[in-house]
Length: 262
View: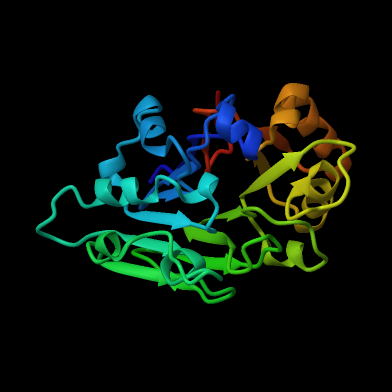
């Protein structure tokens, strides 16, 4: 069975979020199951723009309670349940989204969650069994302490996703043997400090240690987008020795062959 990643938005950060120089719809993983990961503003519109049928979504994954990662989550859940007389689909999300955040609020209403067949609060290291696949949440260091990345095992392949996190020493150990690692690389060369995000030097450090077959950069900030993500990807590839590509909106990657369709 074919399996591909479709980037529905490769922009990140507040300035890009408002300007929409790059879309902020997250990405889809399409194979035995169809997952929509981090459906930020414009996710539903991006599905239609890039030929992804939102009604075929099986699982929404929302890694943390920031608007650029979950704004359109309820819209995607509505698409999953286009037939309200039967429950289908699932959501995997942080505690801050499904239960409550530090203010005692949750981001998705019970109305939408009750329409689903299943909902999962992501717990770090606790493998979630899906229909023919497994998703294991990985730790992050970010403003939302309940956030997570993940490794998805599906169709004999492993896709890792860092989500938003700064680098920390044990981070590479959570992404072994990945065919593709999707890395949220927010800032470019010369960035300093982590402030909860990867930047080019720390992304290169991560790749040099976990050694995926391919790294796809996404969730790029406004300054990085203006300076040239392709050039930044080449620098990361040279420093890490891992093939690295800066994703663009609508880009598709075949997980089996690692071929990229721009």
